[in-house]
Image 1: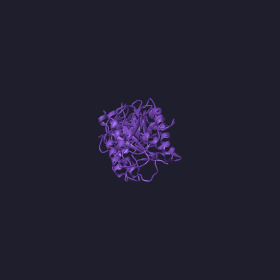
Image 2: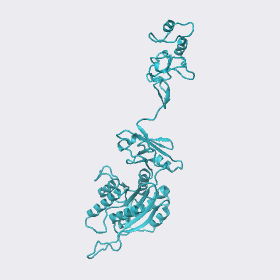
Image 3: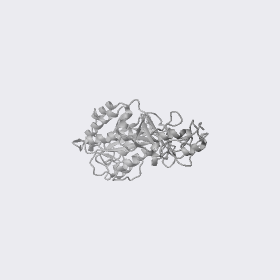
Length: 419
């Protein structure tokens, strides 16, 4: 009790209504607070008490914090005080803070639904992409003002082409494939010599010059033994193993129906289509995805779409209204699609330290060099299976910086959390 005041004086003098036992020494400060002052009885702390809409429990007498109602602390003057209140919106704490059970603003704690799951590395994966290019005779046919073969030469071997732009971020390999068949007699349709004929550049970083030389010195040959070329390339990739830290992929660039070394001139391509599909499925089972780049006329694309779905491990036969293969009508459009493929699907994937349930992957938080990215945004990120995320657009481009650093957190609680 302050000298000159009684307990009765304190009750009657209170401006906060009956039934609230208020220390008489706080009558004058409280009246000042109503006029705009809101300084707490604890030095350096701003009080919400003293306003007409202040929460119930302000300035109640206390001996220790436990005698104050929830949402208050016991001040140095033994009064229940608060610097914030969840009950009154204008008394809320600022961004990044929450009002604690003792009426003090505290740093907002991490979302309990999120677990810190740092990436396996602070830099993106360095993938390996083997380009499997159809070198059959039909590649001489026109494509957007040039031949299909010239379009592929410009796309892959151009001095300002896609491979040149990505050459330091991806291990590129090149395989040209074709065959020659016997045209007549009892052995018609059988290979004339080795099948498939392969011309190859081993996968490596910054080997665009060698790939360009190989393409410019090559010309279309004859047949299209796609399943045999896929099986041969898969065997080589498995024997070689990943070159970098990232996944292995095949990009199949073709202009149409396959045949096979079993019959290079079939009356029906059904058997070759089945064999090609089986080869793509076997590659996926081995951890090698296949992407399909179509440089032909869109007469029959169902087979290509099935290959594209199988190459990503998706259910067959695939949806015709959601084609997964890449098709273009001009060289510039082909360049754009191929660039998008490498940026959004291959070159910007980051391995996670723990798998994430796909249903809730967008509930996670991803930071690039400390800046948050938006899931699903063209310049943000998206899920890429249960153990990878994929950066897109400008976020993908930023991965070329030496200071690049990717961090991620995802929900711990199922569904949609860590597996």
